Image (cartoon, rainbow, N blue to C red; front, top):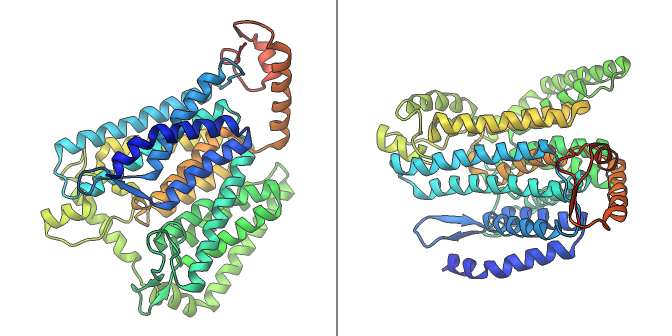
Length: 481
């Protein structure tokens, strides 16, 4: 029923999205599109497809509508305005779409060659990968429309602030305040005593810790660049939020990210670099002394009261490797680990607490290799974009890698979407530099004024393209009169 309603309303939704894209200009339009996407995945709204236990989430609908609207907008705009994109952006988009499409193909093939005990979990994973495919396409479309990275950072800071304030309210009032569980409390029962752990938008305390850790390096970078009230508030509130999740791996991830910044973010001045190293050493020493002094209290809160579960994860990992030998190439089925070990080994286990290991075992070696390649390429490309600030991509990728491999991040779709939005934003939008963006706007306006009188489509000579559009390729700088 819900699917029929969505299909019938798609033309209206598409027309509304196209109108919004045409009416809103520049950063307002970009903020609106990305804002709607974030609202969609934090709402956790899902629709039944008409088949039992098979759902699609609102994020997929929003991405489909906005992607089609953006494509039509760009086709219309090509007759009226300049469209530029670099060869590097095209190459990156093509590779990501090809690799993501390969994972989707293998998932579809998997559904025909392995037994699926829990079709709802299989559908969930397929839904997530379809969304990652559409997200890459959306950010590639943004490259045609000069989505400013400063606007992107501001939207992420606002998103983080709302998540942090929600977490604080959850802790104060002991209520989740989430759409489908407004009155549910945030009590945690796995430890020796009942404790409170905030959920944020994720709806799970470990996932909330993952989200805060993923956002940390971006918020730190934004604060360093802007140093205004919004950037400072977002950074500090995110730290408070992560603290209230009591997610130990989140704490570790943020500490390592901060250490990467302190050690790596020098600007060629040896004295400046030594100063940061001394600050890092002093911070580690202070943390060590505090740990020794408050060891009993810390152990009581983070291990006894919260529950000492980390040792079980390593034993689970070793047992899961044995399961992988049953179906090494195509996996045992996406989302099927718990059902598989129960049916084949008679064991009652929880979901794998490692996203990477989960992909390897449930989706097989081929899918794991494609996913690992996407992750590696995103890291390499981001290093190229942030040549003088390598600490930022290193911090983000390393921090995410740490958190997702000690928590079941494969089921925290909000964390997955947030990380890939950040990664895609880094490689497609580039650095945040208001002066360069303002200069580019001025040169593009000058270009429009001087060349719109020529009929037809003309390719700019390399000298002009470098002068008017620095960083663009001559074969992609075009004018449509």
